[in-house]
Length: 422
Image 1: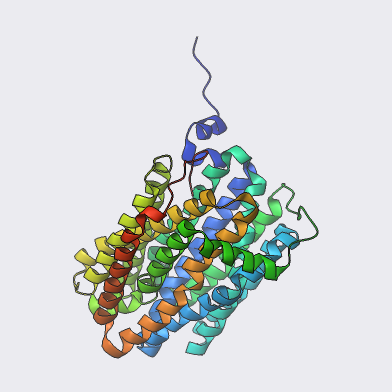
Image 2 (image 1 turned 90 degrees about the vertical axis):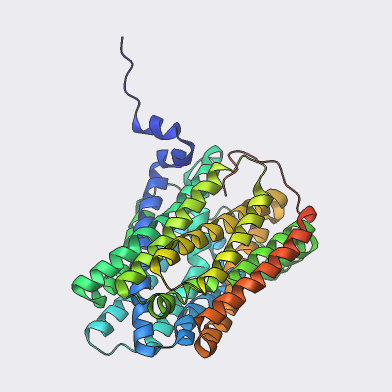
């Protein structure tokens, strides 16, 4: 007697990496986020190319990214509290509607031939403020739409939406720009935000706040700061990931300049280069999830940081795309491995009562401090050339890695819990 074919839910349940997709609400959130991130990736590659064509200035190119990240630096830990105070469904919808306005305006401005550099700065600043609220809201919704036992699988599955979009979006954006022009790319991004808004509307789970009263914002920020810097393990991890964010992650902001000046590529080449970064990031995410049960977390942080330093330095001397693409893929993988593994260690090393605040410090390290490097190395690249900026960033990061190696015994390797995915 033949056995009945397993249902889709049963098949997904048997695959740890996809267990969270058994849940209808999580699937809606996943699809909405993927479409929204893909739209953003479509715009990013076209926007970077246009800004560099308009200004021809690496510093101004980096400034667009700097302006987008600056609100996270200043208000990230504060505005994130909003997601705990009000209905997450309507917060997410409001964020998506506001986010759609900027790209649609850029599309109209590009079509009407009155697009100016300051337009990009304003739109980026607004997007940065929205990010402070949207990211913690969307991530906290994950906890409401899956069971506790599948939460560890849901977190990397949700993260995969961004990294898959980084693979598909740049090539799609370059193709759309070449076939229909930049305005179509901006409008497509604007419309993509409504996919996540629709997902929020269709989710059946209760997304209202569990409590009416939250801790004072001042206590939320200060206690997280104190614990982060008093705990030796977390302090070391924080400083290591902040070093990578400042001295190496700026390469993403100046990637249009790298592909144009160093590699001699056009808009399509920028899309391919961005996709290689995304491919590497996706590979890094899979690697992190695959080794989540192994006691290799501190080693993964150190080796990924070392490789990132070497790749950043090497990229300064590369002029052939066939050599640059693998380096970019490796850099995408290294940042994901270090940041996601550090995220896991932060969660395992912090007490439940402080976990949210400690995680906010992790997010601040990779998104809030990074603008310092984006701005400084963008100016350095403009005044002294991209090779100097990349080589200096890589060498400084290598020195930070040496310091981290001397502090390796200060980081406690906690025992994994659940599936252990970050």
